[in-house]
Amino acid sequence: MYYSGGGYLIYILISLPALLLGLWAQAKIKSAFSKYSAVRTSTGLTGAEVARKMLDQNGLHDVQVQQVGGNLTDHYDPASRTLRLSQGVYNSNSVAAAGVAAHESGHAVQHKESYGPLKIRSLMVPSVQIGSWLGPIIFMVGLLFQSQNLSLIGLILFSATALFALVTLPVEFNASNRAKAWLSDSGVVYMSEMEGVNKVLDAAALTYVAGALQSLSTLLYYVFLFMGRSSSRD
Image (cartoon, rainbow, N blue to C red; front, side, top):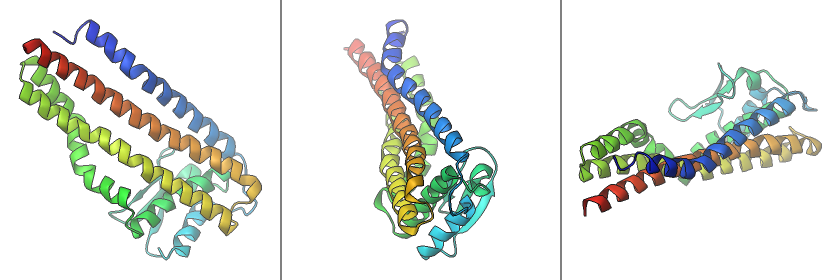
């Protein structure tokens, strides 16, 4: 097949930088979270209390704050209007917990304000859930049976995944900026403690950048295979 041999080398060359960035980003967020999970905030508020305070100050009294299992599994669910915090954030009064809790609360505020990129991302979820797994299958089947149209359909389906990763970037950056501003202005975190908040949230943002680059590099490789197959038919 066209994509064997040299094609795999191209895949490595295209994907390796994004893969290395992803590994570095994961190590960075784990290191930052671990370090600042051991630093207690001066106010002593837990992550759950920080989230509740930020939500209430933004008029989101109906948004529930719940504990969820796992590590760094914190997220806001717009469908049920529930903010879920992992145990290491929910019960912790650390600088890291305050930053993560405020970040997730920032998503709830985005939802309330109908923040544009968040609305776009939410609309894309169904297509991404399908395209992320079905797209590559259809694409490879198209290559196997030398069906350019089928490969193109798979390519288009998977491209939604890359687009979703790109749209996610402003959503996450904006939530972090809201968290930093609110934590500083509200006095929940003292200025001397904001360095830790910034490092934790900036490290988390880097993981989304790495994820977007990984999606784009995979899409680029698929385009490379598609164009190569197309040219070989001419």
